[in-house]
Structures are given as C-alpha cells and as structure tokens.
Length: 328
Ligand SMILES: Nc1ncnc2c1ncn2[C@@H]1O[C@H](COP(=O)(O)OP(=O)(O)OP(=O)(O)O)[C@@H](O)[C@H]1O
Ligand SMILES: O=P(O)(O)OC[C@H]1O[C@](O)(CO)[C@@H](O)[C@@H]1O
Ligand SMILES: [Mg+2]
Image (cartoon, rainbow, N blue to C red; front, top):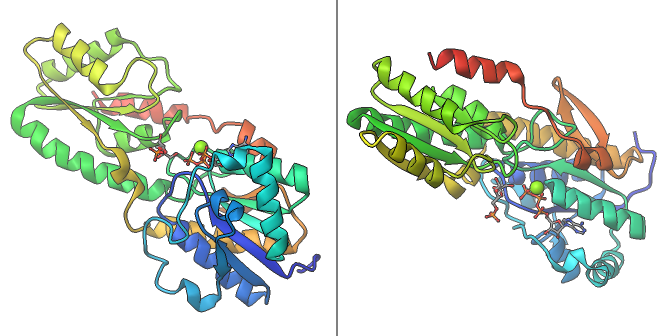
C-alpha cells in the first residue's frame, strides 16, 4: 500500500459538530496505529493548529468514544484561519510538531480552509465529510446525517401525538443550512402533509391548498416540515400567514434546533465514520491529497476537494413525488 513515507499525521474536527465525528477520529487513530504511523489530535479545529493545542493519540486514547455524540477534540469556526497571518501561524506549529499531513473532518467550509492551506504551504490533506446537512458533493451520505434524521423523526412523532390530540397545524423547522435533505427525508418518514425545501419552488397558494385538502379529507392534524433555508419564509412567517388565511385553524410552531446535532451516532453513521476514517489514512499513505473520502453506491471514492466544495448533490425528484402522493 504505502507509496509515501508519512510518519505523523494530524486529525481535527472543524465547523459544526455532528454525531459520528468521534467514531471517525477513533478510526483515524486506530488505522494510524495499524499502519505504524503516529497520530496527533488537534483541538478545536483550525484554532488548535494556530494556538498549538495538540497531543498524540494512540489506539487506546480513543477507547469508549465510538458511541459518543459531539467531538472529544472539540470543534470551532476559526476566523483567524481565514487570514494569511493565521494560516502562517498554523503552518509554523505544524512544522514544530513534525506533522506530515492532515485529516480534516468537517463540512465544505473546513475543506475550503484545507484547500487554501494546501495551495499556500503544500501540506497534504484529506477531507472526511462530517455534517448533519448531507450537503457535500462526492458522497451519498455525510457523517451525522442519518443520526440527525432519526432524531428529527422521533421529535416529530412526539409532536404528532400532541397535534392529533388538539386538531392542530404544526410548522416544524429542521436544520440543513441551504439544503433540504433533512427536511425532505424526515418529512417523508414522519408523514408530513407538506415539505418546504429551498430546492423546490413553493408558494403560499400551494401550501394553503395542501392544508385545506388535509382539513377536508378528515385528517385531524397537519405537520408541515420546513427546511431552515426555505425561501418562501421561516416557520413563524408561514404560521402567521396561515392564521390570517384560516382564522379557525389552531397553528403552532416548533424549531427543533441543536437537538439535531447531538446524541449517540446511529449504526449507519458509526459504520460510515469507521470506513471513511480508515480510507482517509490509507488515501494519504497512497499519496493522495486535496481530496475528500466519500461513499458512493456503498463504495469508497475520492473526490477532488475543489469539486466537493463547488458542486451540489441534487435533490431526488422521486422523493418529492412520493411525499406528494402520500399526503393524499
Ligand atoms: N475561505 C476560507 N479560507 C480559510 N479558511 C476557511 C475558509 N472557509 C472556511 N474556513 C475555515 O473552516 C472553518 C469551518 O467552516 P464552516 O464554519 O463553514 O463549517 P463547515 O466545515 O462548512 O461545517 P458545517 O457547515 O457543517 O457547520 C471556518 O471557521 C474557517 O476557519
Ligand atoms: O451551530 P451553529 O453555529 O448555530 O450553526 C448552525 C448550522 O450548522 C448546521 O447545524 C450544520 O452545518 C446547520 O444545519 C445549521 O444551519
Ligand atoms: Mg458548511
């Protein structure tokens, strides 16, 4: 396997945390131990590189974290790393600690940072997609997405209990930044009356038509799942417009928020994180750099970082159709 002579690599988590990041760190540390290279854990994403916060991770340093949410290395959104001076400090520390390469577990922003750093200083790196949003090109699934979906449907199931008891209309906001993957899939899985996502052109008329249909077809509650990036309006605007249009409807709003980012990773996320962590170490040993390790049709693939950042996964139109048919 080994085409390179890497002796020591650094691993970090960066951007928003996601369930399964710990599993990925464990996989990186253990794969390094297996291939007899040193692994260093960098604290707080790029902040830890800039402020020299790092320590060696052996195979046993990562015990009992496979099942824990969050990231024990912690994470950050580093403004300083966006500056040339910040990145120069990071490079100095990287040399001081004799790190030959980096594995960056995070989202598109973290990969952009890695790409800029690679261009400036030639530090080899591989990205591992860790975000609940599933908004990264080059992988069918990102680490944390499946767990977040399961958290969302559990929450909406509970909302449904209350909604049906009161004949209410609920607007439920889910995360996803500019993408509607969480909303569309959780909406189908929780039997939503309507699902509003940025990738689909929505209108108030269509929404009102759907609510009216729900009322007329003897449903005793309606759940509307709204992606946080929805362009028609946020959940509060939509609830207000609905109350004005249908004064007799009893409307409520729930914003699920950061509960979607926590919790023990699902089996799917643990397997994904384990595979991608090993693939990233093997990829570096194989001489790959400036790429992201992902999974496509259940096979490990490496995608140039520039593509992973720029391109977007399309929403599956079949899912939109299924959601519509099943809301009959
Ligand atoms: N253009 C850039 N140049 C240098 N560093 C960058 C750049 N863009 C992002 N970064 C670094 O990457 C960090 C993480 O990016 P960001 O906050 O966008 O999260 P992310 O990795 O996209 O994860 P998520 O969207 O899931 O929260 C930023 O705080 C910054 O330190
Ligand atoms: O944790 P913060 O900084 O509030 O960021 C929230 C954002 O991060 C994510 O949870 C992950 O990218 C998005 O879904 C959300 O828009
Ligand atoms: Mg991002």
